[in-house]
Amino acid sequence: MEPSRVNVLCLKWGTRYPAAFVNRLYRGVRRHLHRPFRFVCVTDDPTGLDDGIDAEPFPPPPPGLETKPWPNIFVKLQVFKDGFADLKGPTLFLDIDQIVTGDLDCFFDYKPGAFCIIRNWIELRKRIFRRAPSVGNSSCFRFEAGQMDWVYEKFLAEKAQAMDRRFFRTEQAFMTHAVASRQTVNWWPEGWVRSFKRACVPPWPLNHVLAPRFAPGTRILCFHGNPDPDQAIAGFKGRHLNTWTRPARWVAELWENG
Image 1: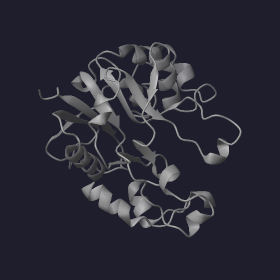
Image 2: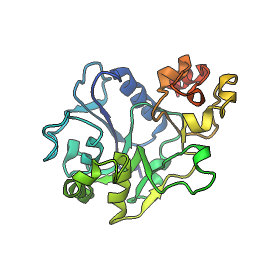
Image 3: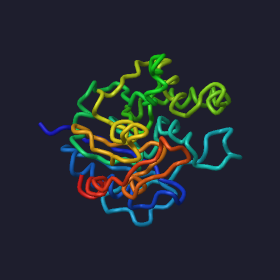
Image 4: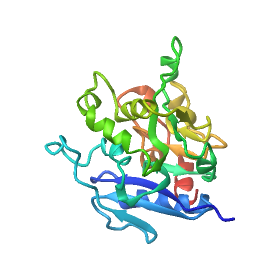
């Protein structure tokens, strides 16, 4: 029997990420997901999106956020609202600055019905004397659309704390907190989603002489923060020497062809 249709959701606003980022993500999903799916991009500008991508507009800002620029990062908490983009059922959220490099079916077969997310990566030097915090990275998570409105309601009830960095440093920290208030937060198996910065770039000072290398077995390559894929291809020089990367030409091949 053919699996039921699932959803893949992404967001695009502003000018930093052009339609090409969404199109490459969509093509990667199309290559590596072997079941019926609806690919939804919620965006303020659908110009240039591939046929097959369901472009939806952003809903109005939540109560209390009307005076702030919208959309902003807290729209990731609005995706849990019932009726968001007319989504129902298993939904895999993906940031658009990621590259699909392997099978995606496992992301829907793993712990069906549960909430699953990346366990956030932290630098090695910050893990020497303490455990990694139990915080998700919202670049890639799966949820049951239409059944988790309470996450959005918790955001509305606690939005002052959610937006105060003294309490929650990021929206993903609040997301983890909100989900954990009623459900188990499940981490994706290590190795399914890998960080370009943490898994591919050699540690300082080797990052200045050795090019990044692809980590075999990766299904989704995540470019959280900097560099983005286009920056990784060219080579990246951040503010700090430990963030510099040599050009990674293989990223271009994966980005185009998965």
